[in-house]
Length: 202
Image (cartoon, rainbow, N blue to C red):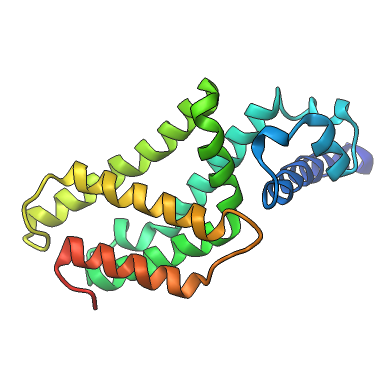
């Protein structure tokens, strides 16, 4: 295989990432309804034809961005979901890491949440995104209830409420270029989660 052949996949990955980065940058100050292939590729500095080498349409692009956010948040949530050490400390670590992701990816969450009610494809993707976290948090609450760390209450309903609160806060604080203070946001979310689940704010 020649050096040129070896370089092609890397160039393709860089081009694809440049398109994704251009979309995030556009969405920091603009609405999803104003995003088009022509506008996006002007931002990315490539042709419309290049876009279709990597994505079927704008909705496929948004699905990719949303999947990336989900993976980043799941990785951030590892301390609380995967360890059986001090759950309060682990939850603090998880929420701080989640806020760090949200502070960078908030425009994606805002764009999808705003557009979802008007587009079935994005609505399905957004609902699936939220449901994924509802299932994970519900399971963890139930595990900690079995161990006596969390009082008895409907785990799923509380998980849904906490997750919807997180989404709303991340969108409000980080959905545009006018970003909030990640430390303050993390402290607020920690206070609510810890008080709700473990009866403590510390």
